[in-house]
Image (cartoon, rainbow, N blue to C red; front, side, top):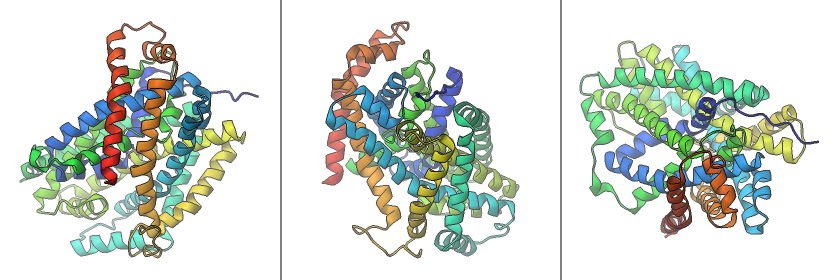
Length: 450
Ligand code: PFF
């Protein structure tokens, strides 16, 4: 029996759900720091170029695959091509999704625990030392990180039991606007602090001298991660799109809105970091040590701290849900397992294997010194996803759409069966898909290995 598929109800909910997959930990703890470190506005320009010339074409290609086939990632790829080599896209996408979830859910768990800590007053009057020791305990304890990771997964599972419309659509429609409002409040507070200008400068001052090949490689990696391409999330979500949704338009709006959210996150964090004379450190240190410390010193900081971690938790949860949905529909459609069962099985798989990532995330964690190919399990998952699975899949997807899928089918998807007057845009897009994006991915991929 064919599984009855749901669809999102309007173009607005399509946009919000897609954006909710793109917006996540990447905006709050990766984008601002990478931008500041790699030349501010200069990096943003390169990032936007990577998004336009590579990220967006891959994203739109995924939309075409998803909406044409209306299947889970594995089924979609099998349906759209019978070329053996390209069939691997589905398998790589599933692997990428699992490996990404193993480490992503660890950090989502930490964020949940920080929401709890901010609510229960753990950060009242903290100093640099206590902030460090709170994070040390959060990441190295043998039980708590696994427990919080499980709670995060369970939350995602409960939302997904409600389905595409009742779960994903309802949640993202309500939470995305709340998230943006909370972020604007935090950014406003931060940029009105004395000495905030230095932080704004750190984020946006263009410094082209810092731009080298490694900066371009990080910009491309970030573009893939930010737009959630290569994993199957976007193929899966677009399999629920309405027929009249304008794919190029949705992809562009998502990329722009996602970049705006990242910049807002940067404006919420860096002006405050500089105002309090702190070091703009990287990823985990910035989010989990510096942020509570700053808020504890700021008037009205307690409530802002709660808001900040709540908004981070919301963003991270919605991105996590888009990953979970990939493997759940794979189970229901390909393995014919009922949705609720599929959710339970996947939560168990990810919490069990993910617990190895939870215990190895910190070098002082109980599995932190067990190395595979010279990396902890947590870092290995990150390495495999960011450096291998995502770029390879991005390349295969773009080649598939550029050269191996019927051109008429591609044009029909992009023009909604010729009801849109966008022939020129389609022409340019197909040119980028065929000739520019693949070459750029190959050059950057090879360079990153050399
Ligand atoms: N785009 C998300 C973020 O920036 O946090 C992460 C992500 C979600 C990557 C879903 C890939 C994915 F399929």
